[in-house]
Amino acid sequence: MKMHRTQILLEEEQYRRLKQASEETGRSIGAIVRAAVGEHLADGTVDSFLAALDESFGAWDEQDFDGRDWVDRARGGLDRPIGAMAWR
Image: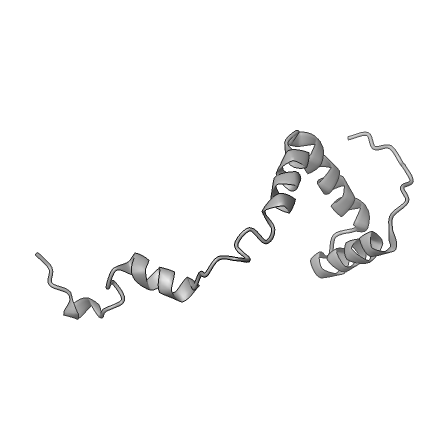
């Protein structure tokens, strides 16, 4: 595969995060950047997805929502030991 050398300017935080990802994964910074560019170009909806994600942050801030209560209601008593259930 033919490759082209290029130079880019990164913000300090972007470079720090790339370097950290490189150290954690053992991949070069270039490989991580190439993968990110490839994913971005392959999916034309990235910008709209990110915009929707940004808009959704905090959507449940004002809701009175307890995850544990919701799970208990969703299970409908299925948290009992299997032996205690009446199988028919």
